[in-house]
Length: 437
Image (cartoon, rainbow, N blue to C red; front, top):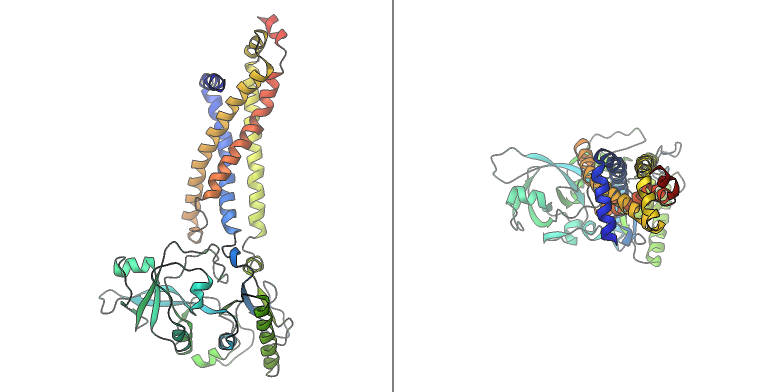
């Protein structure tokens, strides 16, 4: 029977091509706008470290002006000073410890005739790679000893490996970084990318992963160019790099992995003891002295999903409803024009059930067509967003949410725009149309 309904529906749509096209476009426009916003929102609001949410913690230390509140986030600086980062690392209490910063470094092949280019790098400790599930195509992280006594080793991205080594296994190869020779020990897969990049929300939360990674404590010996945020609150006489390292400037991100409640308690006790000792030196005059934030809490504190994002998502659903109402009005007008034909069929023995499902089938075809066109338009919308906003390259991407939402919205569009018109025409009294005939 459904084949018969399908044949009748296609015939009806061909009889009114302009009206049918308007209904499809009305649904497609609403679905495209909604899918574009919904797809980006699903990525923005996700927590890529959800599976570790009870084990990883962003460390905040409240080493700020005791007479003034910190002006953003949860009133505690999101980064720590170098001296505090060193103390966290040297404590050797956490199961995993990451202190890191974003730096700009010039990189080229040794003896290359081409001028060096500056790249976004991350100076970090080796636990970064296990803590944030970094995937390698060659090699792996450097040794623990390379953290404690910095060695000239580097992990590069797959893109950089393709550029300098044509995609070959580059382990053991040399790169010239800010004038020093570094040896490649690992190559990170281009498929690895945390979105949002929870580990560093002080910069743009959706920027691409670093081009290279090398040991953090090279920061002690050389003032690599800082590409991250640097904040301070006191007037300090900073003349040398060592002055900067001992200053109250906050510019380093700190994370710890604590695999049990006991370990978390032990680390908290260390922080309390450390802060108490620093208070005697005139530091940490604010309360609370520290905070440990799960990835989910960190995303919320940094307002990655802002109120504007949520309102935009709601507006996209309102726009979709408006488009579906327009489609419903057009479909109702079309079906009522066919009321005499339906009346004659009813008089000849067709049931209300048959009339209803015949017209609902036509609405279903319009809904599916609208969803398919809307899906194509949403792909164009996502491409436009990527073109306009370079930092959204990892956000405005086609994913499973887009497909699932398109299917769901097609069903919603069919039921919403087709149910009332199909019900109205199936309940039309056939007698009045027989008299006019």
